[in-house]
Length: 136
Image 1 (spheres, rainbow, N blue to C red):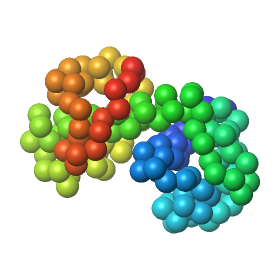
Image 2 (image 1 turned 90 degrees about the vertical axis):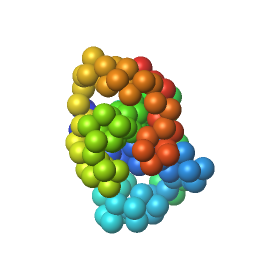
Image 3 (image 1 turned 60 degrees about the vertical axis):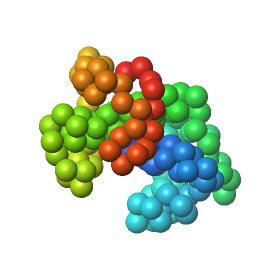
Image 4 (image 1 turned 45 degrees about the vertical axis):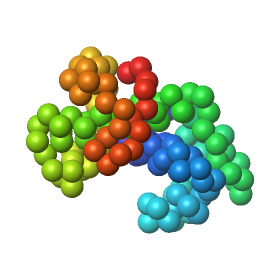
């Protein structure tokens, strides 16, 4: 099974929920994404097959070490991109989220390492969220 944008988006959401010190559940994910519980359950099964999460029906969802590495990369790419767009390119904060949503899925370590260098290893994004320090 391969990575897809949808799988990465679910993993990123799980990461953010954990980052907020909340328990991850099917209902919380479904409510956030405005999708049905069965859709969430199906995706969670796929994420479990990839070794990204620990999941049992009706139990809290946990991220594996492998899942955490991938999720922190995605979140870091997103937040670095927002910093780059605001601080280097002069975009307004309200303009950058949708652009970063697309760019975060690019698989190019060289690109993101260069971006990281350009924003001088920023520790937070323009919204004040911590940028995970990770290898791409």
